[in-house]
Length: 173
Image 1 (cartoon, rainbow, N blue to C red):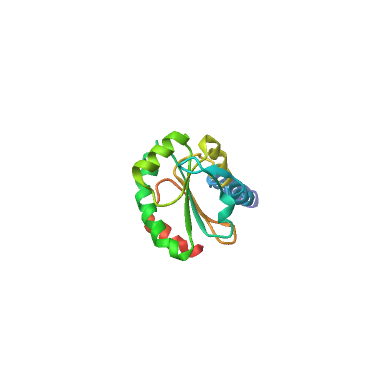
Image 2 (cartoon, rainbow, N blue to C red):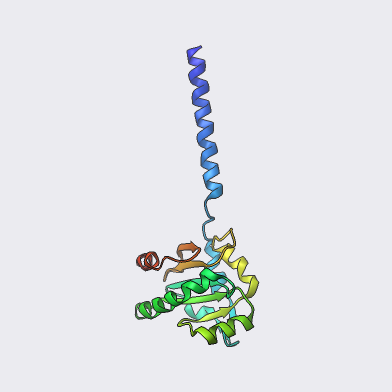
């Protein structure tokens, strides 16, 4: 009887552990797909002034890619800090790119008004799928991706950035 009870307890604990493992895995953000960087760099997107730009030009360069929208308050709040960061990291060869999930007209007006210090591109709502390829299953904004010189995703951030954390994470590049 004692042996059977011990077996039942062991079996129960084993199944509880398996359930907990799969529960945590389901809640964890999806890892960025390896093809997401290639998909990003294959894009030709209009910049804030409507001029088409091939993102392939940044292949082999460490990048911070920030997905944002003009209607997203946390996105707009972090942009002055990101502009200042771009000036700071440019000598290290790190490029910040803003991918707007918004209309071309809204992004053009925003760029003219705020004079952001890094390139802004218009991707519209189709960029939502690109953020998902980078692991943003929630579809939230802002969403930021660190891409190393080797073309691998080093880290992703959902929500407003903590600029000091981002600075520290640049060592991953």
